[in-house]
Image (cartoon, rainbow, N blue to C red; front, top):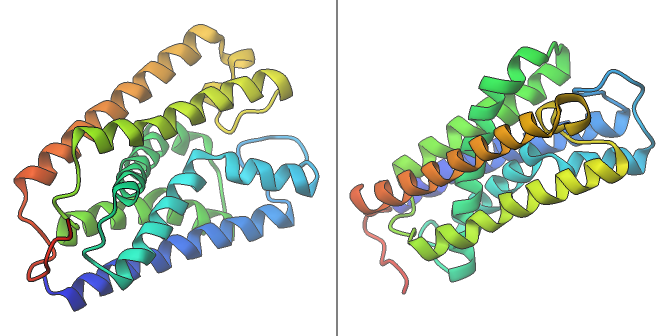
Length: 220
């Protein structure tokens, strides 16, 4: 894969991810209701809730890192490695969790349906396919995986604490009031195990797949 093609692949992922995030933000500002039955809250609360979704955070990480890679396909910095890996694993979890747990709950139409499919289907598929095709690789070690895991753990703790204080959680399977702490704990452990498995899988593939993009000096 040449440098020019790598830039093009990352640019496509970046554009789709930014479009997905911006479209959903516009819908939220307009008062779109997602996964709740009551009237939408005030604008400030809607904006907070928008950014509180793991889906949005993972799409933002993909958008930011893909934009950087579209400019420099062999980009390599210690912190950047962590952010890139967190986005890659996070967007994979976003797609899987949506397919298994959230898809049956949604009945969306029009722009809401388009935003949902972009955030939960298109971006996850494109991000993983882009990594498989153009990398950059190698970039993953146990240290990067450990640091990258901090983000979903902090997100989960914050979400559960805020849910107890304010009564709102972004996903129904994390609602202890409705589901019970046993069910929430079970889902939390299951998703954490999924994260660990994905970090291990990506690390293994990072070592076994060919170094890419080809023809580029891998920065130290």
